[in-house]
Every structure is written in C-alpha cells, then in structure tokens.
Length: 378
Image 1 (spheres, helix red, strand yellow):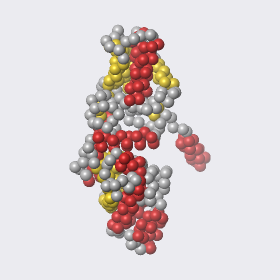
Image 2: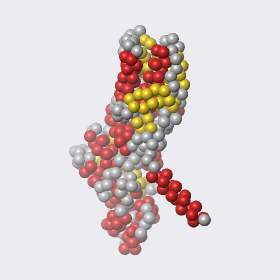
Image 3: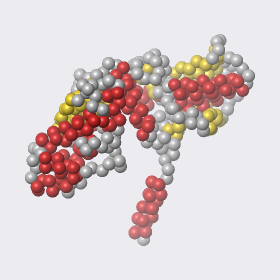
Image 4: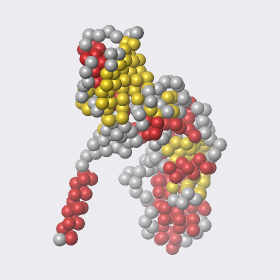
C-alpha cells in the first residue's frame, strides 16, 4: 500500500505540474476597471459591483468591484489585483481609482497614495509625472470617454489612481533604482500578466539600462542574480546604483542593449554554471535552455595544464560549481582566466564587435569568493 500511495502522489504531482499556468491582470487593467466603475457610480449615484473592460489584446474581462463610494462630485471604486500564477509583487494589491468632475474638458490622470513619481529620465513617463505608463493612461482615458459617450455627457473628469500599500510593495521592486519614488508603477502593455514572462523580464532589463544611460552612466555592471549583484556593488562602490542591472539568464540580450545604447564598458558578474555556457557562446543561460557541458570544462582544464586524473574528475563532476571548487582548491587560476577570456570574446561577438567596447567578466564562487577576472577590448 505504501508503494501505491507514493505512486499516487507522483501522479498527482505530475498532473499539477502539467496544468497550464493561470494568467493574471495588470495594474493598468485593474485601475481602468475601477475608474470605469467609479464614473458609473458618480453618474448614476449608485454603486456598481462589476466592471467590464476591453483589454489592449482585444479580450473583454469583467472585474469584481470590492468597494465603491460616491458623493455628488466624486466617486471611487476598488479592485483587488489578481496576478495569476506569476510571482508578482503586486498580486493582491488594492487598486483604487477616484474620479471627480472638473471645470474643463477632457480626462486628467494622476497618481495618489502608493503610486510612484518619476524622478529620473529614461522612462516612458516624463520626470515629475505619476508612474502610470502610456498604455494604462490610454486605457483609462478611453474607458472614461466611453462612459461619458454612453450617457451623452460632455464634462471634464479627473482620475486619481491609488494603491494604499504601494510604497511598501515598491520596496520589493527595482523602482527606487529606476527613479520611481513613493510607490509602484501602473503598468501593462497587453492588459494581462503572463506567468514568468520572458518578454516582460527583457523589457525590464532594457528599461534599467536606458535609465542608467540617461543618467550619464558609462560603465554598467550586469549580474545574474542577487548575490552576484551584491559582489559587483562591492567591487565598484564608486558607481551609482542605477549602473547595476540584474540581467538574469538573458546575457546576450543585456549585452546587446548596452552596446546599442552607447555603453562602452560592461562588467558581467556571475558564477561557474552560467559563465561556462557563455564561454561556449551560449547567451541564454537558463538551466532548461542549455545544460552544463562538462566535456568543454574538461578541455579548459586541459588547456590550463591540468593532469589527466583531474580532467577525469572534471568529466565526472555533478555541477559546474563543483568543478570551480576543484580548480580553486588546486590553485589553478589559469583555468578561470581562460574561461573568463573566452566569455569576453564571445560577448564581444554578441555585441557586434562595437569599436571601443570593453567587456570584463568576474567569476565568483557560491561563497562569493573571486575565482577569476578577465577583460577584453574590441
């Protein structure tokens, strides 16, 4: 019976893993649904419980209005953000839109409590404005105009989007580094949140680089994660915070973005597993995209003068980190220099051999110890 229970659990786990991930909705969609409901409540002088909007992708979605208030000249409505199965910092956030009549015409849009303000150039919103991106602004404006047209009204409306816990949520994001202070951004180009979206992550990397360039940064430090970024910050304490960009697994994309935006010095900080792939010209280094090639690591070990018994150990290793520890223990610094130099050459190719571009790689261990540091100039 124990064997049957184990098999059953495995089967259930497999079924769970096979289920498609559930998409969610952007803060922009939530704010739009809330604004539409608030204007309905203001015009009708009664609360609505649902708000149906059209997303930029053409899909129509109904949002539940969890709270609604109205007076003679203003009304507000609240939506709880559902991020789906994406590990989104704003999942469960309260998104509130308040609308009020104005003396003029047209739709004014601003941010209230918990919506950040832009303080640095390079973002799609001008400095000084609320961090409500262009597509959500368009969605809000069109939703308000549609309601006014339906009731045949010609009036000015001001929309204020608030996120009561936005300032606290923003601490889990890179907003402060991008110059968005006081809260979160109201985002979304498609209206939906795709779980673990590659496009969204790449867009955030490109935006971070753009902000750095606009801020006058000439040397960018790319890292694969939190530990490697911390090491990079300790290595270059003189650089401003926006010079440090987490590229994740998108090594080639990040380097291309830096080169295209005029950066002429790029430092990449990473560990053995990902850099062993970069050294072979693999620029998307997720574990599922490309496994570690221990044959290649054995070739590097041989080129660095390792004896046959060590090369055999490299071929039989379980992880690239294990190989790194082995070489570190043997004091074979040439192994890391060779790998780093190979990384630099492959990265220069990825950047299109941009004249004057210098690329540096810094390889560290799982314990954040320096293993090797190499630099190549185009």
